[in-house]
Image 1: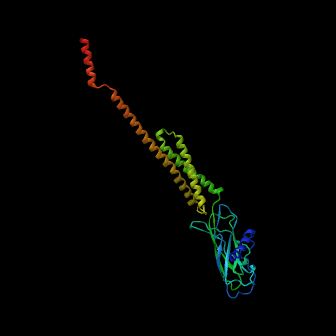
Image 2: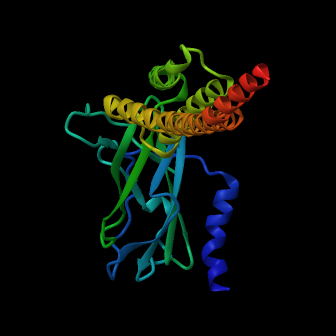
Image 3: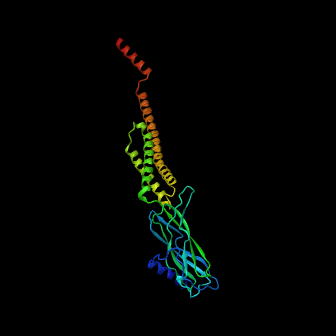
Length: 299
């Protein structure tokens, strides 16, 4: 019963899709000091790390804070102040350009569970944001006696599929394709440069494996594209590694086929030689036959 009372306001808020109507730096209404002082702590946070993938727009992180002791009944949502002093900043290596997102906004807080909990949503707008990982802090305050509280927030953005990633993906795939083609060409040199249907099939499979490996690198990296050189190098490495599997298969099959062919050829040659030796007349037998013929003539 108690758990239902705690979760019900949040469930209603989620179903109603609350609007991010409170902007940063919006002061709360003035009210009397709270006695005894109240401290806040995080009870739940739905998305401390917001993953935007390749899209942009606004995502919400629902937060529930616990007040200890509970807030007095005279404290209303308009008395709670939600703010962010600086917009979220991109973090990473020193060579990354310093960029920031827009200031977050907030939904109007709900005070529930007899003043024991405060629920609100942090609205992070990633429109126009560069790829990377962004961090910032949300501050919760209010009347004198309500201890200020800071909440960490992180957002991860990756490069869109259409654009620079698509170009780098095609370049990396082309390099991997050339690598695979040349390796197969070396294996088929003994056949006067002609590639068999099986080898062409392995080329296509290898290129497909390279494409899948590169896409997997992009898909698994939530902030792909923050460092373009490192991201492109990761694509090329994945493509060459996956393509090498196909060329290894070709080399192994060529070795096995070549060894088997030589072995069967030697066996056939030895069998023919043995058969010829058995069918050829012996020198002694031939001399004896000639002597008999000469004796018959004299007679």
